[in-house]
Image (cartoon, rainbow, N blue to C red; front, side, top):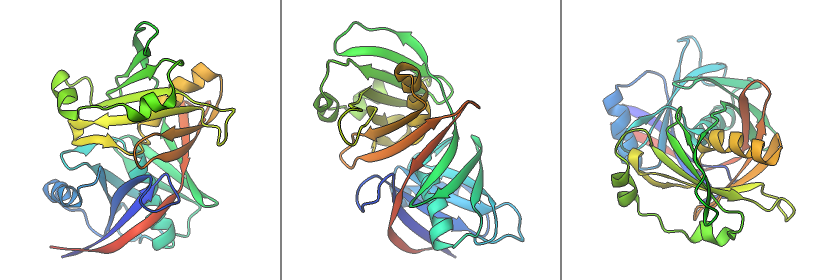
Length: 277
């Protein structure tokens, strides 16, 4: 059996930046065990599998597909960068003719629209609830999104961006400190500098050792939480965000009145090949 595979860097227009995802468009469903083994082999934060819903469709003419995401250790319910990369594979490499593609996922229908050099993803918004206000320095807010199991910690506005970028997080200690299952990811965030070019409204980093990802380079699903939080704090619907991993990545956000969020980003293909089984 031969399975096509593409590796794309998402939320960037430069190779070796953003967040890499492996994308496998499949003519037929495979077993969950095989999906997981391929994800282990690819060893990226996510490997995504696109399958047809209607057997008469192909990847060029179809407008609805099934999409699943696997980390090296588990299947996840929502992944932004691998959804972005999946849409790019269909639009760019499969020459899909539709203006909008819809993916059926564990988080419901996710629509992706091509716009210029990038793609707009219509995602659910996941507002976090406040757990505690913890002093003024260096932590200002702690919130939990119980839906996504992401814990969000906001650093104080008095902190410089270098505090966030230079912070050392021990993924083993992090995982061992939380074993209740209520938390599967840690978001660190701080207010940005919208008056300085390129005008980022906020910064973040994301850690998910519970899902086999010590640090994720650029995380769309985390921005369903961050977008809700910062929209309320800044009084803005449209925001520009930057995730301060070593690779780094940029996301355009628009919180909508229907309780969802548009996440826009670009991709670049760095590898195209075949998995032989």
